[in-house]
Image 1 (cartoon, rainbow, N blue to C red):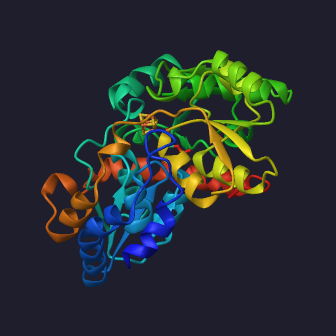
Image 2: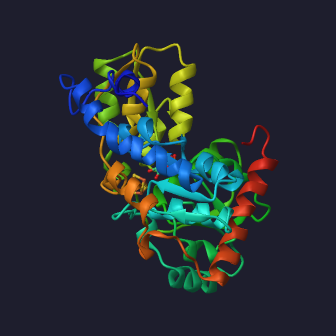
Image 3: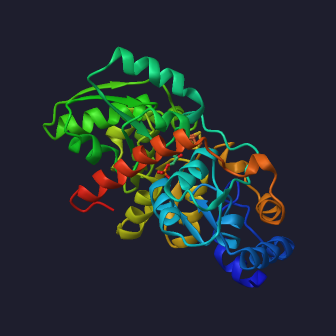
Length: 342
Ligand code: 13P
Ligand code: SF4
């Protein structure tokens, strides 16, 4: 890669406000590590998958595939590379191992937590299953493999509503995101689908901070702006948004929209991508950073490819792997059965 190619991708991204931009020197400085990653990927038959929230240097300089958690899980499932480096957070790297267990999956992020995945254990689910023996247990993909191993079906932000609707049982326990669960209950109720859905008490610390009042303010100041929210936001926020969907869903929506102003209620990384992809569109308002996603670096990707530490190699207990893989495969089964499913 040339520094000028990287600069072309980064030049429209606003850094921490409207006045700061990436400059050519910054791209030149990052080039040696980007080229080292490129050479290591070839030498080791490796690919790098990066979530929509990671730094633009990784997104445009190192990733072979980018996307939301569902899209990246599909890429990991189909990959014939020997090594999959997952630049995101730990539960996504674990999911890659679940869908393609014979591959080596490497997690370069030293701080790859997630307030949702860290808020519930396998033991919690075991206890809840005793309390709700007639319920189908549905987990958000933002959970550890151990938690998935105790659940029946996994969902992501791109298919939660359609899968909850299709599950044959009317009694469902949804975990761990209570806000996503409440949004799904409201969505189904508006469609006339009444199910008995219990929800766990987890939240995403980034998305739970958004308030409905900020949408009112944006509507006053930017009456033509289209407002997009992630389903991890509060129901009061989701109800007022024009579109609610996954990170890739929001990206597609901006691509297809004829509006020129947008307000996004999600992590800043997606706004960076949108500013790069759609330099003629305007993204109003501020965004919030996820400390876990932002702990990814080019240096750690190079290091993990060169010589991974044991804690960076995703290994799962065989029983957990078997049961959690089944849970994720059930998601693919229901998603494929959905009309227009991906
Ligand atoms: P997506 O699957 O929509 O990319 O969401 C993942 C996530 O962690 C959102 O906070
Ligand atoms: Fe987890 Fe929230 Fe970060 Fe997504 S943004 S990885 S849900 S803490």
